[in-house]
Length: 230
Figure 1 (cartoon, helix red, strand yellow):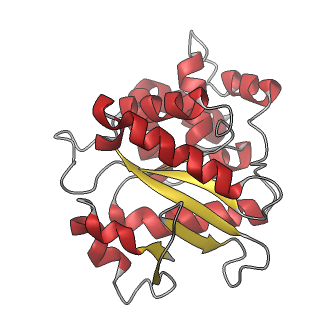
Figure 2: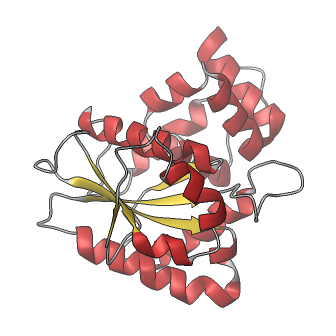
């Protein structure tokens, strides 16, 4: 489901054709009070809970909009907390037409700004961020996240452990002089929350492009070579 309130927001101009397309019949319009999207985690019914997500844009993270965005994040956390079966996520849409960057690249400052807002709220610090490159990738991103939940690959009840985060520093090729910075570790862990996700991504063109957009070509190449060449 998607919230009827999206029709009143500027991003509807680019989201509307996608959400109302016959190709996405599984997303029907409804009244959702605390989030923008609700999708069954098992893909069919709500007995195992839903993935409840809010949509954020680069414009949502500007100083004048931060308090509003922070409040939306906290309402999402409250609506999906224990004992609810529902899970939460924040969708960060990079290219929605009106806010497309001139370079066509994913602005890493948007992800960092959103991370900061999330971490500043103890009630919402566990909520993962799902980067979405463009409106047409919105539903596939939601579905892929639900598949990850079904596999049990991701635990949303708590943030990643320190040890698993630290292991990302080892995901570099032997020829790289410096390990991943803490900033790069945070970025990669948000993009690909498990090693299985990262391993799968480096073997796909879209995954490699995401790494290059966020880390630059040298950093992305190091990670790709680690997984593909050993």
